Image 1: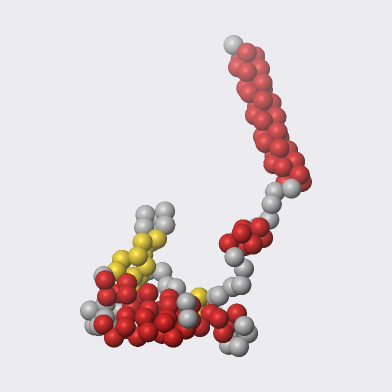
Image 2: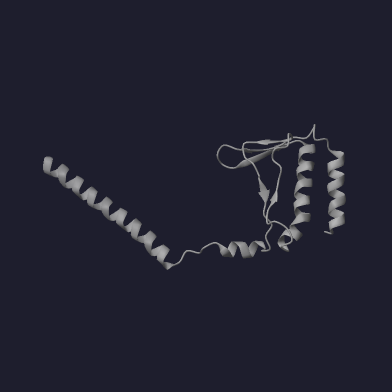
Length: 138
């Protein structure tokens, strides 16, 4: 999307939503993830922040500006247990990012197999010793 169109949307979102009425918060949910709690005004103001980051990302990726877009989490309409401090734009697409995660090689698999085998070996030795001790007592 062209920058002037993004700026028009950002201006419209910011001008039609009152900071006094807006609420947006990020909270941990039962230790299993996070929830965003927000009203419509807060969602639209946060969307404006994300669109502004998208607009600024082109300059950052091109190396014209600093490498992180900081979000002002001190504003009164932003709340929550967790804080999003900034956005770091990257050039890579999703497939390139997923390929960077280390793949398990044969050494990792052998190590895992060795650990499991050792545990099973000690379990068998323990059970044989326990069985022998019980038979010796009886």
